[in-house]
Image 1: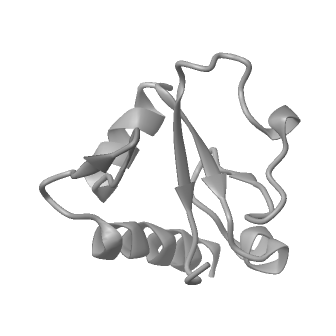
Image 2 (image 1 turned 135 degrees about the vertical axis):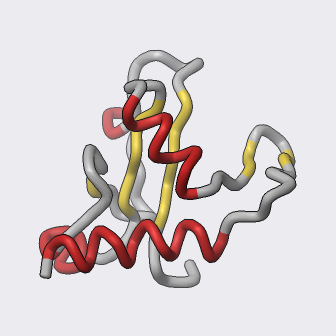
Image 3 (image 1 turned 60 degrees about the vertical axis):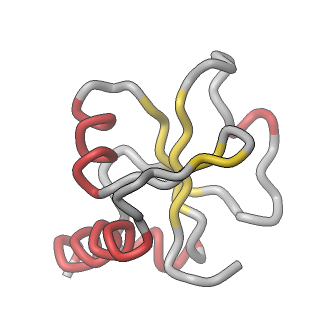
Length: 92
């Protein structure tokens, strides 16, 4: 079940991603392969914005849970140049 939820989360990222990686004000979208590469290289911090119950059932490897409406400075890395990846299955 956990593997299924992880795969579903990654599939959701692929569904939402665009190949052109359009960027606006420092924000953009990534493909599943790009996120996977960032995780493998330890080049980004990944944050799950789903409900905490969904996070507990399964999440992208290395992802940290944060409430989408209540992200605090302490939730984020001290290195301000670090890449951050946020994902969720709900339209917030």
